[in-house]
Length: 179
Image (cartoon, rainbow, N blue to C red):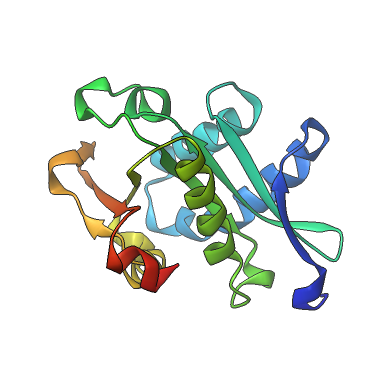
């Protein structure tokens, strides 16, 4: 696969949907064996719907040597992201951060998060949120390294799974050291 110089982060085009879906299913497919079959099927359907349906304020892709190898969606609120206005998150939320397993280790997830930060700042936001679960331990380590902190007041359960919330303050010294 190409060098870092061949990497670009950009807004997804409608014509990118099939490639984005393929990357997302490839990236999240590793969790299929950790979930009950019916839960994986629901998750898979949610991924497909996220690519095809309305909702995010931005769909961002990472392209390496002309191939889409990563993507992320940015929503403006917990209501838009999850249909959960009760979480009272009215600042951007990252969802479905995905990097193709064959392209991992190149900083692509970090670049997608940085672009999400840039866009959140452009929207005038003071924070950026995301939600994840314990089965995504490598992602959690990345988020924490980039300065995201747990936000237990914004967590919820999906069935018996705790969906953990993380928040990045887009101001202050900790923000500038990570970004």
